[in-house]
Length: 548
Image 1: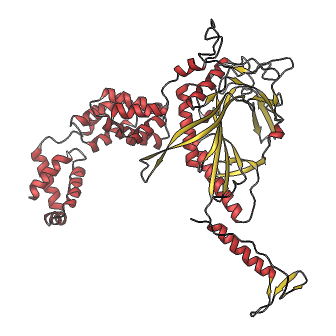
Image 2: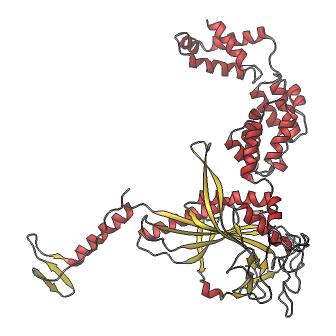
Image 3: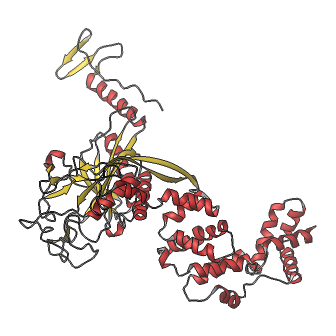
C-alpha cells in the first residue's frame, strides 16, 4: 500500500487577504472562510491520511538466563530455588567491606557454549564493568556486568513459526544476536501490602546470569515467543541453564516501538520481567496496539519502562527509562580481563583445567534442537510439524520413542496418537508429560491391540479415556470388561447392517440414486450400534454388498 502524500497547511496573509484580530480571512466567490477552520480541516485530512497508512512494529528482546551452576558467579554460595530467605548469602553477596569477587569457571564455560550454539564470535578477551543503580535488593549499589566488551557477539538464532489454518505450515525465521554477556543477578524484594513493608531476600543476589541481547528483527508477539522458546530449548540441550520460566530462571524484557514504513523508528518502550512465553506474546501485541492507538489519537509515546499485568491483560507504566549515563558504567577494578584460549593460542604444557579452551567446548556441544528435529524426521519418517511438536514439549520425545520401541505400530501412526490424543489430554488437565497417568508401556499395549485388529480405532479411544482416569487397569482388562473386542461373527454384523438400513430408508434410497457420500452416514450408524466394535472397512463391504 503506497503512503499518501503528506502536505503542510499554510495560510498566507497577502493580496486578497485581510487579518481580523487573530483570524485570517480569505475572500473569494463563496465568501470569507476562517483560516483557522482551513487549518482544522487540513489537519483532519492529514489525520485521516495517517490512519490509512499501515503501521510497522519493531520488537527486540533482552533475555536473562540463570546459569546452571552449583555456586554463584563470584562467590561460593550455593544456588538453590525456594531455599529459606537469606540462607544462601556469603559476605561478598552481602557486599561487606574487604570482600573480593572470584570468577566461577563453570559460568564462563556455560556462556561460551551458549555463544557457540548461537553462532556467535567468542571474544578471547572480555571485560567486566560496574553498572550502578540503587535498589534495596542490590547491596553493593552496582551490578558487575559486561557492557564494553562482552564474552560473545554477532550471532544469530533460527526459530520456527507454525502458520496456516491448522498450524501445520512451518516457516523458519532468524533473529540476530547482538551479544551474550555475563552478569550478576540481584536479590529479591518481597512486598507485604498488608503490613505496608518490603522484605529483602538476598539468596538470588550474585547468581550468575547470561544476558542474551536480540536485535529488533521481530514484528509481533508470536515471533518473539517462538524465538524465546527456541532459545529455551537450546539452553536446556546445552545444560547451560534449566531455563524454567516459572522459577524465574528465564526472564524476558521486550523493547517495542511502532512507525510508518519508510519513516524513522518510533520511540520504544520496555516491558520488563516477563516470565512466560504466552504472556510475552500477549504483552507485546497489547503494547503494539496501545502505541498505535495513542499515536492515532494525537498522543506521544514515552521512553519508559512498563510491566505486564497478566490478570488485566495490559501493560502498566512503571518508571522513566534509564539511559546509559544514569548507570555510570565504569571498569570493574577488582577483576582482570577474562582471557579465553583456543587450540592454537593455548600455552604448551597446560591442562584443560588451567584455561577455558573454546575449541574444546565446541567439540563437546550436544545436538541442538534443529538437529534433533531433523533426526526425528529421518529416523521415524514423521512430518516436520510433528517433530516440532514433540521437541517443544518437555519429555515428549522420550515418551514417543519409548512407545515406538514397545509397539508394532508404525511410528507415523504412533506420533498421531501422541500429538493429538496424549498431548490433548495433557493440555486439557494442565499436566506435564512426566505427570501423565498413561505410561508409554500402557499406550504401546493399547496400540498393539489396535494394530492386531483386536479392537477398532474408536474403541481404542474409549479405552484411552478409561486409562486416563488412572485406575491402574491395563488396556486388555478394559477391553475385556467393557466388551470392546471387534465383531468376529460376520453374519451377526450383516444382521446389524440390515437393521440399520431398515431404519434409514431415505438414506438407502439416496445411495441407490448414486449419492455414495451418504454411505458414510450408514457406516457411522453401524459403528454407534456396535459401540465402535466393528471394523469400518468390513462394514463398508457388507453395506455395499447389501445395497447392490
